[in-house]
Length: 89
Image (cartoon, rainbow, N blue to C red):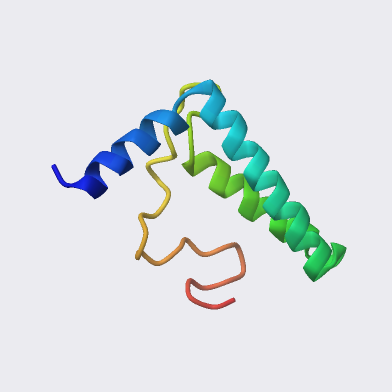
C-alpha cells in the first residue's frame, strides 16, 4: 500500500464519521455561498443541485446510505436530463 492509498483510506474513514460529515457539509455550504455571490442568484438552483450531488457522494450523509449505484462513475457520460441529451449543456 502506497502513501497515497494510506492517505485516501484515512480521508475516507474521516469523511464517514459524523464529524467528517459535518465538516464536509460546512465546506460545501461555504463553496455554494461563494459561487452564488460570484455568479448571482440566477444560478442559485443549479448551484444547490451541484452542492447536493456532491454531498451525496462525500461522507456518510448521517443516514449510513452509500452513494446511489445508478449514478455515473467519474469519466462516464452523465445521464441526460429530461429534454437534454448527454454531453449537451
